[in-house]
Length: 493
Image 1 (tube, rainbow, N blue to C red):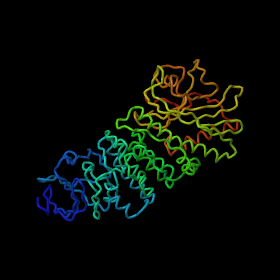
Image 2: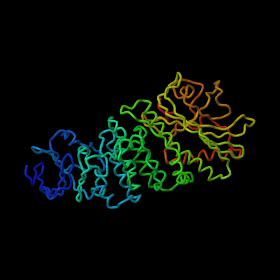
Image 3: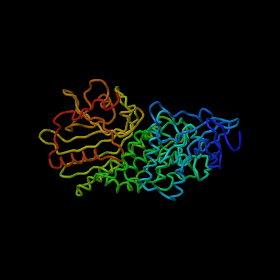
Image 4: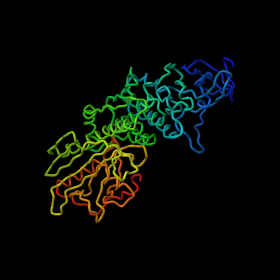
């Protein structure tokens, strides 16, 4: 080929180098019609697969948002050639120019733009090399370098050369274990970038990146809102199944701009730093081939950390609204008492996923705990209510979160588990498994499986605080009908 031009679908006159990496060089170019562009020249050698270079990202009638398009492509005798729009800057350029954290509005814009691309491509393409060098500002949006060349492309910018060929700072634990990459790899990398944008530094600064990504816990993000800090932390969970899927990530990023907080969320903002510093459970993932037990341990750790946030919010809200309550804290959980009414939330207990007796349900429960209100026993025998919280994949196989539910006796049943509580909680086991199965059992589900979104506990907190207030005033009574809300279709059978 000519050292000054290359003929593809159009002829492109090549200009000055813009960047270089282990798999090729990026140069400025101008098309025969005057279009300014960046041209990536990838030498034909092992590792530079043509099939990987030219992935078609288009879908009939459906545009893919925020992905740098390929304007032209082809090959010469010794190189594959990809032509892309000339970006104004890369995210790495922006971070270097700012020299610290980005303003919250800018950070949310970057994360939302990138999450839009991941949501559109979920299930089709995994980027595998998401990092600030590959996030480019093109036509007013932050875009990913073309997925087909993402493992090779360095930043295509107009100003700076980036020579780092690795992405150890952004690699998910499963990449270090040489496991198959899924969309969760990109969600994790976005979490690392989000932390970097908000804190001005990496969550895992090295030099032993492998050990830190496999076992380390990032420092808290005290300057971020509780909602956004919770989301970034979920993206960085060690277990890929515990991370939010791209569509959920995008929806929660779009809500994160709303800084309106209920009293519970406001209390969490103050409690967050204390909680994050108190309890950090180390995850065990020593081998590359993670066993089922190791997978569950990773999920149990995610459940514990997620539970800490909701627990802190609930307790801080009660103390804020009723400062004279008697508070008891124990390893197995906390309780408060006011006017002979006891309200409490237990600590999560890991579940092995197998001890269901004869009724193993379709859902996989990793951990469970109980929230309850107990009142003095009256003439009717009513003593309050308790609900179960299960960390499980209740609604989508392999996607775990905390879900609230409760149980009731089948009319005419002989179960004695109720003991004055209506509805009542059940730990995972034979009775709960029977209720979750398709058989007619002595217990039934009495409350729909309701997800507790980490960092957004308002509905759960306000409902239980309201019941506690009713109980203190002697107004809490047995529900008029059971189940109170229709539970059908809220969990997988």
